[in-house]
Amino acid sequence: MANNLEKLKQVLVKEGLRFTCQREEVWKEILSSNEHRDADEIYHSLRKKAVSVSRATVYRTIDVLVKNNMVRKLDVGIGPNKFEHKMGIKHHDHIICMKCGKIEEFVVNQIEKLQKKVAEEYGFKLGRHNLQLFGICKDCQ
Amino acid sequence: MANNLEKLKQVLVKEGLRFTCQREEVWKEILSSNEHRDADEIYHSLRKKAVSVSRATVYRTIDVLVKNNMVRKLDVGIGPNKFEHKMGIKHHDHIICMKCGKIEEFVVNQIEKLQKKVAEEYGFKLGRHNLQLFGICKDCQ
DNA sequence: AATTTCTTTGAGACTCATTATCAATAAGGG
DNA sequence: CCCTTATTGATAATGAGTCTCAAAGAAATT
Ligand SMILES: [Mn+2]
Ligand SMILES: [Mn+2]
Ligand SMILES: [Zn+2]
Ligand SMILES: [Zn+2]
Image (cartoon, rainbow over all chains, first blue to last red; front, side):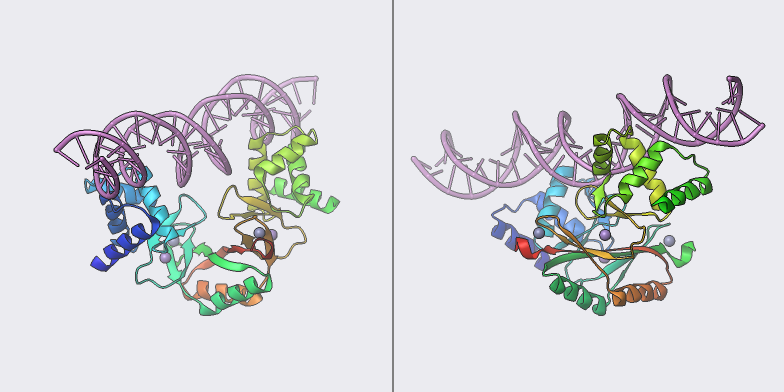
């Protein structure tokens, strides 16, 4: 979607950063999948497509995207952080199989509300939250 | 509490492991505080008391304790994992200040119930879960 | 166009938390 | 006390991510 490219351009201007083909390629790569992938998977996928980019640039670009709410960083409790783009994706949490690593997404509005209430109660200005359920999936039981 | 020492001995027997003074000291050190501490803090605290123990043994002992439900491992999203003992402590989740690192504990039974429901819905046998709220505490705002 | 200025990139060094290796030491049953 | 086996600690290795810095690329200025 040309729209998403525009979004990147806007954000780079806002941050006083330049629009480069590396940044464009990283963003397109992240947009190209709805999996939960880590930086290295994104890096290798780009290299396989002969895109000239370095690991450092992948990390750096992801940072910009995360800061600007275009990508979510997922701490799945083991191994590297995973990333997912947020274009046209509503907020959700994850339930993760401890055997096969499968990740399913879920939304419970009630939980979200209760979290906000907790933050209020404790006088915290709530930023992000981290909710992962770890279990064994049907296939692995 | 002599009771907690007994608990350690039982667990070591169950696991076919030997009762050593290092394991005893690590366990006592963890029991001695209700803070959320990382392995290195526990290690240094022991060394300051002239207990002869290595970092490796601290990590190894904590692993046994975590596996046997005596200690909880806390992934606080930044830096090393934190640990807290579970003796006489009910389950709770954490709200963490992104500025000063302060950690507060909270319990919302409704959230716990909803988590179980999600797991059922997705056919997962639920193990542990990870719920952290990240925000800015009153003092830091 | 040439020069200057400033940003970005990539290779690799580095950090930090944790795990692995393995020879020396300690536990515990007989 | 002896013997077998487990444990320990020093240190090396690992994995994920960050930092450094010289070279390459834009953009702005002459
Ligand atoms: Mn997701
Ligand atoms: Mn706690
Ligand atoms: Zn599974
Ligand atoms: Zn604070």
